[in-house]
Length: 310
Image (cartoon, rainbow, N blue to C red; front, side, top):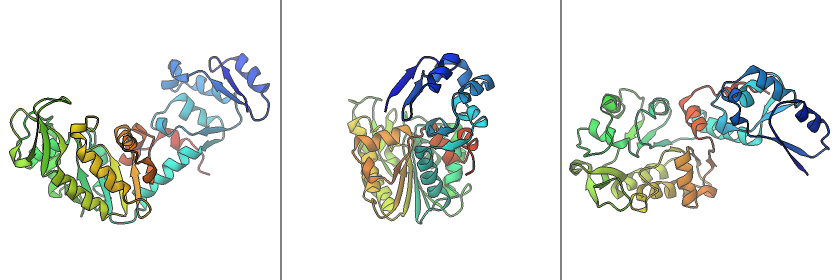
């Protein structure tokens, strides 16, 4: 097999070079992101790309949430099919969300509630247990009446968090929030730390990880599950001091290998699982990033919608 690297991504020279290719060879075009027509989904660029081929196979799930010329536009000019990775992502994520074996537990972390509202709204109506972690847990704790020190607090999202915890925005799902946390006197790997109850978070300190009592409760919920979906770490796992909660949850999920369906997704979550050497014990680790988030939220992915149904 030979690989032919070609400059640019449109023009007669590409057509001539591709027509001269031998069976089994591959032509790789220049990075199309440098063309402004790509992000603009320029119809002319899409037509130029389509003119180079007979069939379009989209295996870029990570870009499927964007309507770009090379993902959505070109699909209107050629028979458009999902590649093997695209198919794997859609089957794994779709199966977990649409036909989960129960109990179904979702774990959601991240810095801000506002970044995850659409995801939370959808998941809380689908799962049996919803677990809250990461920096956004501070807003949920404040909604419960706890002081959260210098942690990031979205005051305009407190009412939403309060409603989620009380059941106003959900069906029968149980929502779990931290009961103890690891706090630090600065956002630094070498900051002073304390393990405290959520009732005793000091002024001017930041919540940077869930505590061991919380981690144990979360792990019990995970261990009782038959489907687990995880998006977002439990703390600042990049720093060893604040990685304990993420590690424990990841290990609990990995321990379900062979007995439950486990899906992890999102750049930080996948990074954490990889760092811990647990990827092989996860049913599916999504490569999608923003596309994974959009899929879980229930949004239409333009790069998927443009593909043929069969």
